[in-house]
Length: 226
Image (cartoon, rainbow, N blue to C red):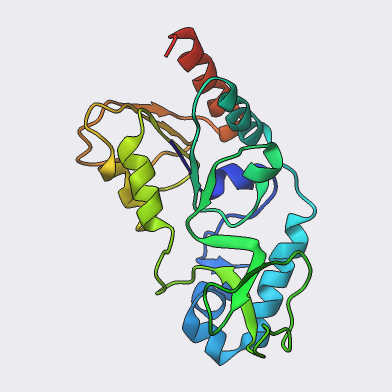
């Protein structure tokens, strides 16, 4: 099982969730990533995600994404990502679970199960079959994470747990580590890894970027005939 965060997408040119000053593209994240922000200014929120969607059309998977896809030749790879881009899918990974939603999808504001593929701008007046406004298919602050139960199930059956490009500060995603079986090795790939506390598992820190660290890990696993 592989848990990926903003760091792996940043290497493809997608900005990480927040800049050093706590702003996201100049916005307080609560203005553009919360139900309150949506109700306050729908136009601002729609334009914010329209810009993200346009940017996603301009970027490509990097070597980290590509090697994760190639690992499927030798392993049963499940990717659980905090990212809302589709770079894992573009790279060819076949089992990708998005915890925080997807940029290239939208859903009804009244029916969370009404979800559409959407690769262009989303505007006020774009509605579902009942005339309800569509919104980005993104899990905002304060909202439940629908895919969490499935992510926990995958984690509980994993033989290896790999973390790539995340500070492990965003919950509930960061809590997945503690659902692993005790003897399951954990590999943490990040150039600036966070400190992990109270983890009974064998842990190896790989202080590299995803483009360097994922090939390193692949070679390590294959050489050890794991």
